[in-house]
Each structure stands twice: as structure tokens, then as C-alpha cells.
Amino acid sequence: MTNDFVPKLHAEQEWPDGVKKEFQANLNKFMATLTEESASMKGKTQLYIPEEHITDVEVAVRDKDLIQRLESTVIYWTRQIKEVVSNQDTQTSQENTSPLDEIEHWRSRTMNLNALTTRLKEKTLNKIIEVLQAANSSYLAGFKELKEKIHSGYNEANDNLLWLSILQAPCKAIENAQPKDIPKLLPEVLNNVRMIWECSRYYNTNDKMKSLLTKISNQIIHRCRAKINKQDMYGANVEKCIADLDECIECCNQFREISKKMQRMIAQFSSRKDSDLGKEDTIFAENEAFIQRCRDLKEICEGQLQFALAKLPIFGGTKGKEWTG
Image 1 (cartoon, rainbow, N blue to C red):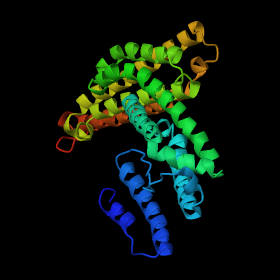
Image 2: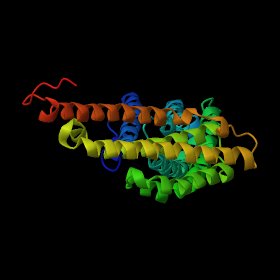
Image 3: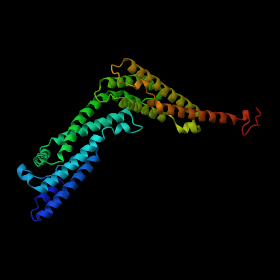
Image 4: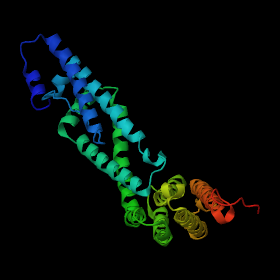
């Protein structure tokens, strides 16, 4: 479209001026939407820059139809950039995500904002801004304000990615570990969390740290769930299922104890005095709920063993004499 169809339409000389200008305005809107949707499918934000062939700013300012088209373009850019800025912490609000998902979120965001920053520096785009500036367009103020937020947003995303990346290796290890092996991996993970809290410039708020600890809890629960085989619980190997449930319960208990130890250290020794992590128990809510579910499943397994024992002939099962106790 951009390399073939659009240039041909711009080169068309036989259409009346009114028809051509109206068509060009609608074409810009269509291409902006097409460009946005195409980039969105790849998780990116792309600003469409229309081909207006501006050579003289003073001449362009006197073309009211051109100014109107350029203002429509800037309005579209402003809406796109506003969405990027407002969606800064989308990943942190999603349930059941892990630290690895959080790292990927900030890696993707860093790349997107970097590409957007580069796009905003392009000569053709800034020529449009120059024309609207000369025309005293009222739509530039909001655009320029959001443009500055893209720059600061990139700095924040890049810094967050830098510090969160220290969790990549130990959390990858958790991703592939058995529940019984996870507790020995936790001190490194939580020490890195403490380092992020102390040293990062942006990812050091109470809310972000609580969210990060919750994501670590999510990852541990996911590994424990993978350990529990429903077929074993239904009778294939009930004893093994009980052992697996005990292993998961112990793993989650260890996570809670090691995390609380880290919280106490932060509260006692941190150079930052604005932390309330040492008093926070809500990050363990899902952990506690999972432990209780494991205990409930364990009771079911133990009930199955007692039921199977009661059916044995020596206890008066279906093939033996009735057991009177």
C-alpha cells in the first residue's frame, strides 16, 4: 500500500481538486488505522506518517485543507501515544503471571518505546509538527506533552528491565524444578528482589514489590500444580499422590517462611524507611489458599485408602464376611 498504491493516488492529476482532497483525507485515516492494526498484531505501536510532500512551510500554512488533514493525523497520533502511556502497568494487574512474564512485559515495552522514540524523531514527522506550529494549531500541546512522557516512559521501562533481568536465571531454574528443590532456590530469588527494592529507580514502590512477590508465589504454585497427578488421586497411585501433596505443602510453607524472613530484614535493615513489606500478609493469600486445597485433596486421598482397606476380605469387604468391629 505505502510503496505502490498510495504514491499512484498522489500522482493522479485528472481528479477534481475537491474530490482528490476528500479522498486524500479519507486515505490518510484508512492508512493510519491499517498501520496501527498491523503493528498491534505484533505487540507494537506504529505511527503512520502521511505523504504530503511539504516543501515550503509558509505555503503549507495557507492550505486550509492540508492543515485540517495534518491536524487529524496529530489527533490520531495523540490517541495512540496516550494508550501507550496509560497502559504502562498492564502486565502487573494480570493474575497468574510469573516473574518471567513480568520481565517479558518490560522487554517488549522497552523495544516498543524505543521504536516509537525513533519514529518521533523522523524528519517527515517533524515537518508536519513544524507546519502546525506555524499555523498555531491547538492540537499540538497535548501531543507534545505525551511525546515527553514517551521519553520518560522509555527510561523507566529500560531501568525496570535492567533490574528485573537479575531474576531471569533463578526464576528459570524454578520453572524447571521439582517442588522439593524450590526452597533452596528461593534465597537467591528473594535476595535479588531485595536488591531491586534497594537499587532500582522506578520498580521500588510497595505496590510493585508486592506484585512481584505475588508473581513468584504464582510461579511456585504453578510448579506444584504440575506435580500433582489427578489420575494418581483417583486411584492409580494414591500413596504417591499423598507424598506429592506433602511435598507441595512443604514447598509453599518454605516460601512463606523464607519470604517473611526477607520482609523482616527489609523492615529492620533497609535504608529506605517507607517500606511496609514487613507488615504485608496479603501476598501470601493465594499461597495459603493453595496449601489448604492440597490439604483437602490429601484428606480425599486418605479417605480413599481407608475405603479401599475396608473392602479387603479380612475386614469384611464385599467378598468376605461382614466385619462387626
